[in-house]
Amino acid sequence: MTKQKSIILEIINNSCEHLTAEAVYEKSLEKLPKIALATVYNNLNALTASGDIKRINMPDGSAHYDKTIPHDHMVCTVCHKITDVSSYGNYTDKKIKKAYEKATGENIIGYDLILYHVCGDCAKKQIKNI
Image (tube, rainbow, N blue to C red; front, side):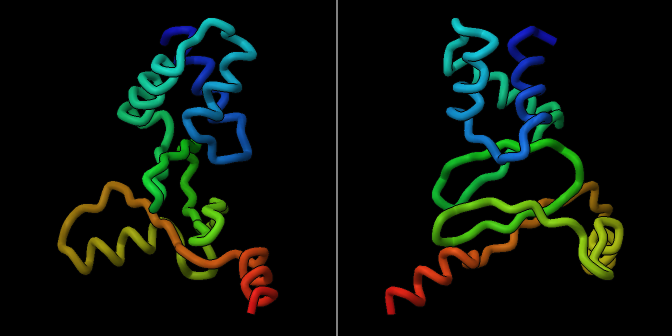
């Protein structure tokens, strides 16, 4: 693995945020002052293709990057904030996969779940504007 790819992977895996390519680029500059934005994009694409990181495609067309530890996401449809969601109650990764396998008759190897909502902050702002 190249030094650039290794640093980009480290940035994603150590982040508590869901970073855009531009944010990864800004953080990369701290360790690699001469790195090009195109290099960051190329490495993000390669890391996504190899399954080392996860790309979250947003409704507005932007992409954010995340570690591959199994979890789902909630996205606010107003401010586009991404929140990690762990399995709740009876809804676990294995149970969800089994339910879809039963429904489709196919072997499900993985899934991405994004729940859309209006976050509390945006809901409060909407109420104030009424």
